[in-house]
Length: 70
Image (cartoon, rainbow, N blue to C red; front, side, top):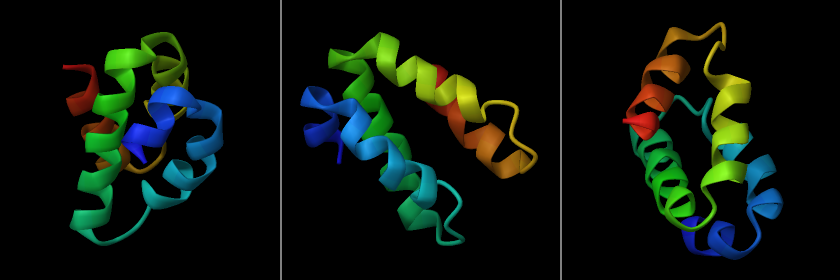
């Protein structure tokens, strides 16, 4: 997802939005890795996505997204 998102971030955001709420840690770790890869090439678009979820009701989602920002 990260490699695709480097070129077309909007295309993968729907998938990442679903995956970020997955109960399996491997899936959410993959989302974080993808966002980091995308942020290297497409930082503005990636930050827009992160900002949408940074105040999510789920504290685990918030915590994981803070790792992307650091």
